[in-house]
Image (cartoon, helix red, strand yellow):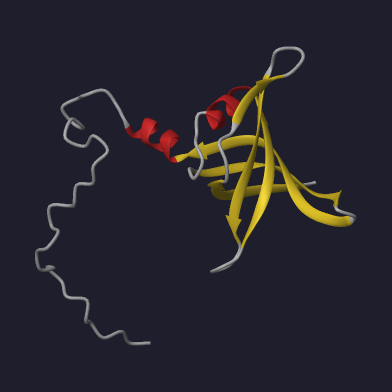
Length: 136
């Protein structure tokens, strides 16, 4: 197996299921760009709290996952197909990032509720121009 970090978009809505012993898991399909106009599909499976987080996402949502990647083969209409399968150890979505950025209101961050604030010097001329000659 190969340790991998992969990011892409969900092709369809992940479905949370429970194993025979009651533990949550989810299967999903991720479209991953491998070039300007080309992408591949990676099937994934996640367990536990990671599966619960992925299952809250929807079709088209961006997702980054890490885990063990392995090549797979199967037969379809008499033809051998090849693919990649990922057993997820961790996942990150834009929703996870926005949750981490939110903090309780305090005097220091009450105006920064996830919005970008340019530095105070933005748009003002620089004290030192960047057209200095570089002598090598």
